[in-house]
Image (cartoon, rainbow, N blue to C red; front, side, top):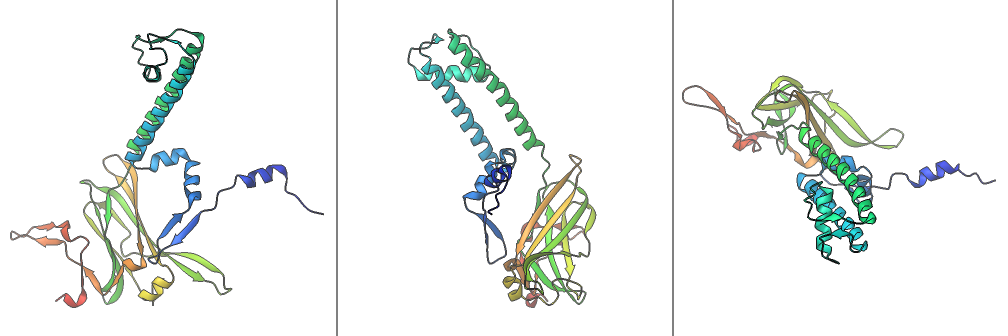
Length: 308
């Protein structure tokens, strides 16, 4: 006897999440491939409109606005001579009448003179009110969303620190304010095979010498000691590449300007980790004994052999 799923389960299976292909690069970074990814984005339009760049957001608003007006202009045009003071058969006149109706402008020069036109105007007016409310809400949500302007060094270095190999990278706050109670988390993600021969992508927490600071204002040198308790103990550049190792950095804190929690994240691949190199100093002294920071060399590194 052949078993069949219930009808509601078969329907749910048909509308399941589409297949998404993920490409793993040599540096350990992931890239979502295929049209299935875009299909999943369009199934969540609110998230899409909040995450796309401003250029894309404004472009979608303009395209939607023009498209709606064109559709209603076609509806008026099909109604014949239904708009007073509009040239008979003029698509341009009914289009601009649709613009006036959708935006609730109402100059009065053109107005509906048939029942059909009044019905279309009523529908367009309702759509215009809802559209303006949705567009205003989306724009406010994008403007009010707290963001952090945190820059991370392009590479990670592994150098001796206090006689122990130490992983290190730099980060800085690009805004002229403070991120209060900032917390830094670093994770190692790599491919592993268990004792049972099962492949898995495992995530490790990397313990930092200083994982939080009361005020993140200028720069922050993040360090992880590679001792016998570290997941990076005994690794080599070759092993990091073979296991598609990935460093995921996450920083969060309270922006003093808006008093809201802000987040920033960055990802380093295996090719972004440099051995036996150190960052160029960015803190300098003035002749009168003061100190200043020069961000010009923020991403620069130099081999340990070149350091006197």
